[in-house]
Amino acid sequence: MERYGKLEDHDRSFDIQFWQAQSAQDRMTATWEMIVHAYRVKGIDVHKLRLQRTVENFQRQRR
Image 1 (tube, rainbow, N blue to C red):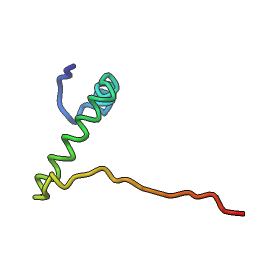
Image 2 (image 1 turned 180 degrees about the vertical axis):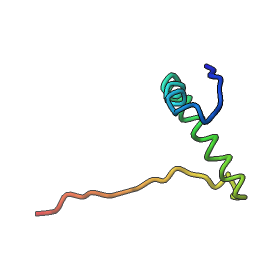
Image 3 (image 1 turned 90 degrees about the vertical axis):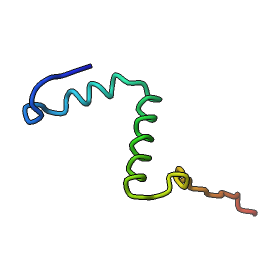
Image 4 (image 1 turned 180 degrees about the horizontal axis):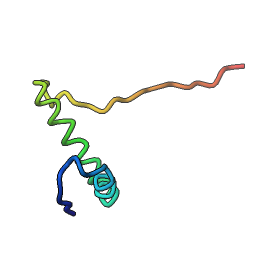
């Protein structure tokens, strides 16, 4: 997909249309690549990147 013209003459509709045309996997891959790039720019070791996980433990009360 391509669109030509000056940046100031365009709204975000092309971006929205482009990303909605991508698969969920492609969007996740692009998101992860941007996260890794941002961490590298900040000088943070990308090998320490992890998805946050919240762990909770539910137990039934004894009667």
